[in-house]
Image (cartoon, rainbow, N blue to C red; front, side, top):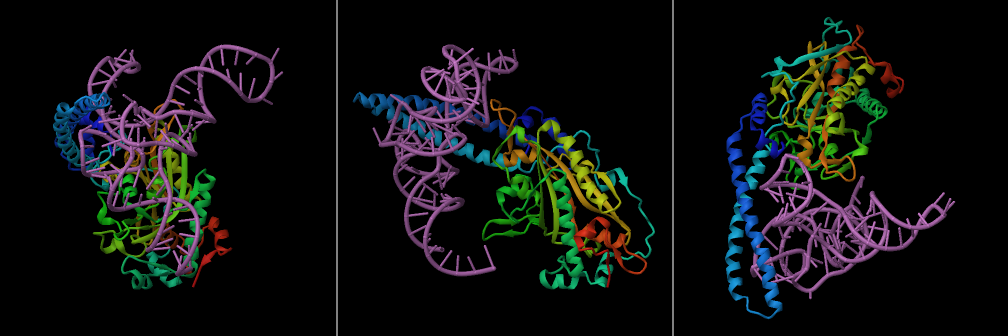
Length: 423
RNA sequence: GGAGAGGUGGCCGAGCGGCUGAAGGCAUCCGCCUGCUAAGCGGUUGUAGGGGUUAUACUCUACCGAGGGUUCGAAUCCCUCCCUCUCCGCCA
């Protein structure tokens, strides 16, 4: 959510931001409604003041046992007026709130303008990309051959888009989760284990709702949503709170499964492990002071990259252009690994700074000192990392001529000493 | 799921429908006092929105779990919902 005052005082900046994100929004209509609301509030408060004054007068008269019938009747009319005006205020206010929730965050000045992923900017690479693997084979073929991946079982259980990992594949997944969490703990993140079902308010807080309702699994009976990422519960853990400024920057990491309906996805995109309805992910979330958030974004990115370095997986870092940014993000880096079997790059992490956009929605603030007013924190999050695509990369990248898959050294201890996945 | 109790300021805890933004205590911060690791005295301390100011000051409105209702007027009465606690039941 944007600051209502900023929208009011600097509408052009907001208009420009909305344009850069490629979103349609009637800002003038919004501003007119806001103007109308404020004049109604002024009028309502004027009448309430009058009512308060006269009510005291009535009280006084009654104590003195004098007659108050006359002003009492007059006040009845005032009371009716207040009710009418307040009803209108309520309606307009609700309209404005609803509208405000669908205004996207404004891209940071450093974000390149662009209309599609082709306009994203490669920031840097790490490691050698071998464009010619020993035998280009997609991970699902490797995985099924080794018996670590069972796509048929997945679709039996949940339909298309669900997967089953078997034996050493399941172990590999568990090992990766542990390795990632251990790395992030060492980097200074507190590990959390959080609910996978959350309330609508949480989903609004981080910005998934109301815009992306179609992409969410919803348990209507209980009004709960399955989380699309641990970002939602972890960020909302401080909703409504005022954090102690001394405690910032707060860093959390959490493992969770992620549930996404992926409405509208189809074809090649959905094959194998690339796009599934349920996948595991280790997430990092930060709460920080506004002046530090862009430094924290860089270190967050580094923290995610470190996982790939430990796993000896080459990657590149992409800065998203304005229209490729998510609704809530002000700036975002994607980390992509190269899958030699598929001959394409896979997004394994997104590291974003939301500035105060989520903090306003979820009302997360901090106080610099006891005497000072609370300010909104800046929130950031990044995957560290998404499991299935990392597994896909490892399968395709570490495939040996004999058909075995080499397990990255750092992972071996987590695999009970196992060095290869083999038949 | 059933029965009961309760949700008030940073915390504890009062609160006959009218001068209660809210007693009292603790804590906080400021000052005074006192030569001893403390006590005493006085004062201070919420959030949001509007108006106002260069910024303060100032001022208005709202807020006692949430939302409705009754009333000239609600923390206080009525309804609905949420949450917490205790007991019982059920269950991994």
